Every structure is written in structure tokens, then in C-alpha cells.
Image (cartoon, rainbow, N blue to C red; front, side):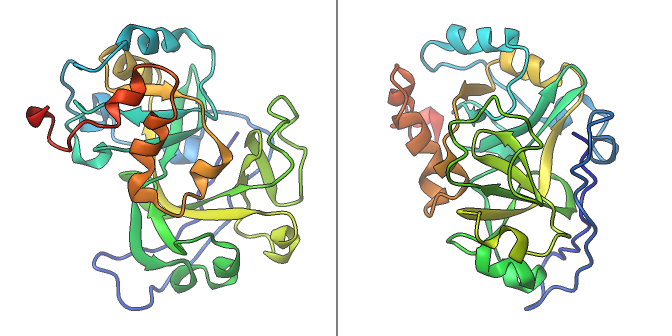
Length: 259
């Protein structure tokens, strides 16, 4: 899945109305591992992340997930021991994962910038809160649209080409949106839309190393995770619904030293 990021100029601090330009997210046949996105990623190992050994429950079960051939469509949930502020209590939806690397977007980092301030034509389709989310620390001048199409949730094995025009399936009902397409093409089909500035990217083997170091829990995603109206509670909500000792992690204090 070659993702050519739409260039959306987000200034920090942002003026009341951001001046932006956009270009398309290519939804064409995948030829290589997200070359345009990964070319912007830092070359240092783990993108500068700092990890500590986790003290949470049943980590062995989650390290074993590194043996899965692809984690596309799953959630990475930051462990309480993850020290990097970019990913503190982060919930990352993996949009692509294979031997050439991984990329995803953080689902619970809303910004004060309204979607209408930078992509006015898509504002009506954006779910509450109708703001741009910071998808990760890489390429904050680029945007990705992720949308849920109701009725597609049971089709995780369907072809990525299936679905409405301007939408490409990632997993089940979750897919990427071509932000250059006319919004009216998707208006009748889309149940919810999120716009992300930036993304999280890993080179070959980096995510697997981080999983082995205990930086992330890997769990199944649900369509509602993309459009949670209370993103600040998503980390705890995702953990709480797990039918394992992971549900206990949802009660951890924000400061692990207080546990």
C-alpha cells in the first residue's frame, strides 16, 4: 500500500485558520513499503524512543505476537513503562505492517485545530470531536484520513479494493480515505472520519524489537476506536475490555512509580 501523504501545512503555534495545501493519498496498488512516508522517518533506532522493562501482567503472551505475519489493523497500546512522551498512554492503529516496516496513527491525540480550519470540505464528515488528531511524531505537515464504513466490519478478509470509491480497506470496516476525492463520493457510505496530521513509522524489524522489549500491548481493534468521542479515555477503555489480566492495567496511575 503506497501512501503518498497529502501535504497539510500545520504551523505550531497554529493561527486561527491554518493556510494549507493538499495532495492525494495514493490508494493505488502497493509497490513498496510506504516509500514517501518512511523516507521522512528518523534513521536512528526506535525513532529515539526510551523503554524500560515492563512490570505489567502476562507480557509473554504479547511478545509472542511478534511472530504474527502481519499486525495490520490491530492496536498497539503503550505499556505504562513506555517513557517517550510522544507515546505516553498512546493507542496506535497499525495501517500497514510487514517485513519492510510499519506505520500507524495515534488515535488519542486530539489537537485544538478544527478539521474545517485545514480541510474545510471534509469537516462535515469528521466525527466528534471534529478536530485534527496528531497521528504521530513524523511528518506533521502531512495528513491521513481514516474512515469507518458501516457494514464492512465483517469483511476483514475482503479485498482492499472493495468498498466505496475514495476509500481503501485497511482492516474490516476501517480504511484510508483519498483526501483529494470529492467528499460527496463518500458522504453516504462513511459512518465516521478522522483526519490525522503526522504518523508513527518504524523501519524493518524496529516494531518487533519494541514488542520484544515490552513497549506495547497488541490487541484487536474495533471500528469504534477510530471515532471515539472521548479519545482521552481510549487507552483505559481499550485495556478494560480485554478478557485477560490486561484489564487490570487500565487502573494503573498515570505515574507508574505510584503503582
